[in-house]
Length: 312
Image 1: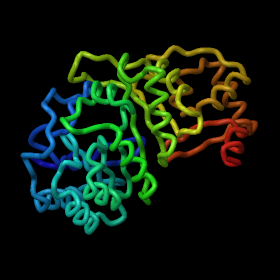
Image 2: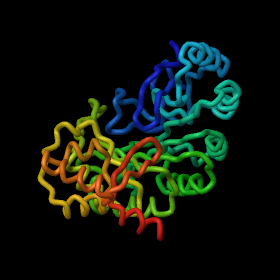
Image 3: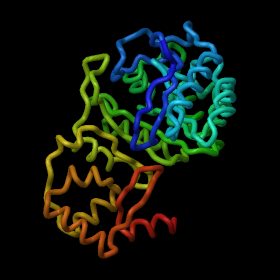
Image 4: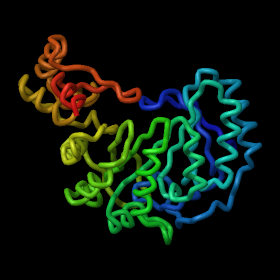
């Protein structure tokens, strides 16, 4: 089975060519409630390993065919940082990638391993998951292998964020009734307070999950986003925008809403009725609202909000 898939277009990362570091079977140190793959007992070490030479050969062939790639993404049917030759693989990819970026999508658990930590420092972009900040919720939602604890993971993410020279993204996936409580958000706020990153993506279940759990509606995600500290670069990631019910907003309400949480055009289309969108455009044209780019995602916020944050 080929380790290469795509190209796939991502609004957040551009045109991506994927490398599956566990192409033949699911190999993961988590058994997350929301996983789109079938349930599987979490493991610590990969038992089915693809040679680096095979991956590089297949990658080179794919790059010869697809010259329009923006990013080479390391992922897996499971957790890519469990791949035992990750450091050597990244060196080999760097030797042939040219101007293309390298990215990994990780659940963060192996970041406590210094070899993995140092390997990831070589990448251009890193996306780490942090679904919970309390031990009980972490074990309930991510169902980790024995011996994996959340406190060392948070410590490693924090340390990594202060050492990494590339672009770091965090992702939090919300499951109804599990990690969406005010107390859990407060714990996440404390954990995130010293982490430096480009963006924090909060999303929910949008594919059939491994277990009988439910996601949140876009409105619920939007409401939840206001429980996060306003200084955090929160971005709502949801395929459920189309299901949202639009509402009417005055000029003052639009500015207040954007001040609390900058929104994307997709968010605005989901939340604002026709008249509110007209008011929004007028405020934008009159210089009351500005555009902010955070790593390929365009947000809108009041001009005063931007000046205030810059002053800080």
